[in-house]
Amino acid sequence: MAGTGGSGADRGRPGGDPHEWRRRRELRLERLRETRRRGRADPVPTQEPRRSYDGPVIDVREVQKTYQMGDIAVRALRGLSLQVDRGEFVAIMGASGSGKTTLMNILGCLDVPTSGTYRLNGLDVQGMDEDTQADVRNRYIGFVFQSFNLIPRTKASANVELPLTYAGLPRLERQRRARAAMASVGLTDRAHHLPSELSGGQQQRVAVARALVTNPAMILADEPTGNLDTSSTAEILGIFDRLSRQGRTIVLITHEEDVARHARRVIRLRDGRIIADEPQQFEVRA
Ligand code: ADP
Ligand code: MG
Image 1: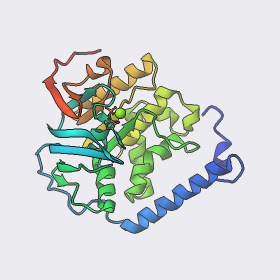
Image 2 (image 1 turned 30 degrees about the vertical axis):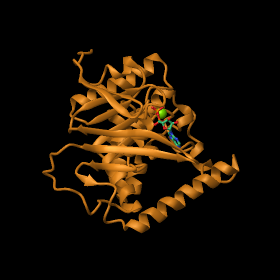
Image 3 (image 1 turned 45 degrees about the vertical axis):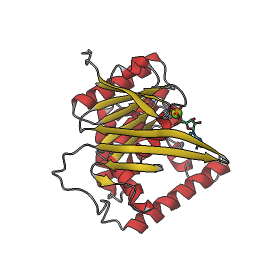
Image 4 (image 1 turned 180 degrees about the horizontal axis):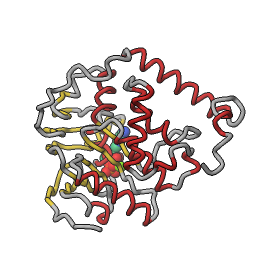
């Protein structure tokens, strides 16, 4: 509990950084609006496929993405097709500029292709309005980013609960699931800590717990160890290994061979195309 005792009463009051306070208030309001928009009872997108759906989690066909920069068209993805089945652990690699982030944004329903199709867990993402897309993103994808993206001055457990808040789950259910997710990354004793009171590795574990808490169809991680030291990197990759053994679908974007070695399949991009897509022997680790 190291020194967090008094922080509860201070939080959310104008006092410290006024920008921070305003931002937090905005966020609370946004959460509230989001919950109202959806109605508490229906966190599940209407297009949800039957439980028996066992097609690929990711089904990308002939996707192109062109960014228009004034007169210049930047072809970031040039006809890329890719299927990922449930339970796969895939690393996507490529030099800077090869299209990794562009692909990640499309897989994460944060952007849409210029042409071609993307189906996530059998759902046609392009055809949805933005609210439904946000629902799908929240429900089917657990994001892990290089920079953790935790909300500061908000304790770890509340960060983990956030996706469930968006989904409109009742408080007790949120707390129960957040506790389980925190336990699964070995952070039960850090639930009441603020991000600033945690090491980088611990913050990323909180982010992994937040990614897991909705029981998503896949974990989408963009350079998740890019900001971590060697031992924290090993810790996070160890968690990914375990999740993979438990049958989680994981897509890991990285430019480090050592990190990619944890995946069972490695896809390499160059100039917006797949130049290699190969299975990897899985190394048994302690
Ligand atoms: P990576 O993540 O592998 O470094 P990106 O997907 O970020 O690659 O970029 C692929 C190509 O698309 C690069 O040439 C990059 O400059 C270009 N690009 C990426 N995002 C944009 C954007 N928003 N507007 C214009 N060009 C972009
Ligand atoms: Mg990138």
